[in-house]
Length: 360
Image 1: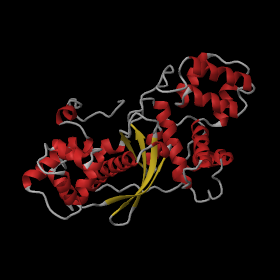
Image 2 (image 1 turned 90 degrees about the vertical axis):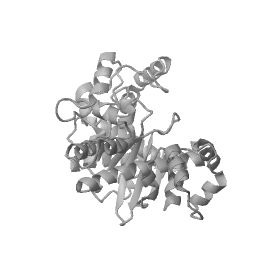
Image 3 (image 1 turned 60 degrees about the horizontal axis):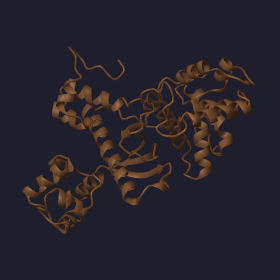
């Protein structure tokens, strides 16, 4: 028991065996830690406490039963990640999802179960099918043809857990994963990179990963193109754009672009690409805009185009933790631990009565 949990915590911390040995001031050797992880020996109480402190976990965490396993995980730009980085990200996801399930179990709330809105998507995985897939999603979920207020809120409502994790400063925007509980229950998860502060591109990432969950396709170039196009179609329906811009435009004002960017919650680049795809913007206009985005530095990180929105925070897990605290199911220390914050910061968010959520 201790072995697998210890290895999970060490991997999540991004430490090698020798790195953990150094962090505990060589209280025991890297070889001894390796034996603990393989279950060949057990650490003394003093060593156990030092390991827990070094890995920022509770001692009892190391004794918990392994109740969750990531059964599949699909990264965008996976080839750019090293083996250790991939393992660390997977360990982070397991740890965060375990906390999520813990508070669900504490409250006894019905666990949301992801179910695709329809079962007739076979053969619709090509980029050219993205329009039809997105239209079916909007129809089955009664989304109409207007802007989607919150992509995170939408997928959480449909039974997908959304996690915000530190995935580094690289180009990894997010990924989708399937996890399996000890009782065999499967869970669908979308992870977004909390380092990415551009709210529009975070929304696009969630929509992109939703396509992978809908179709269960792989990570080849065509499936990535299909998911990318699906995200644009889902966030910017054709009828809504034509109703506001018309068609065959040879010029456009910055005021129009910014208004639509804020309305649909998309980047100027995504908006321009979608309008060109639909023929709303003629090719010369689209090219002129793209050149201008490059000139202004908006087409590459950190994407500092005007009126960038704040990222949509995953709200369900946070709400459940605060409910558990308010109803007395957990202590403030436990709630803060689940949320990955301090008790001081947690109480600093309270006003006279209940806690307000982000954006209230």
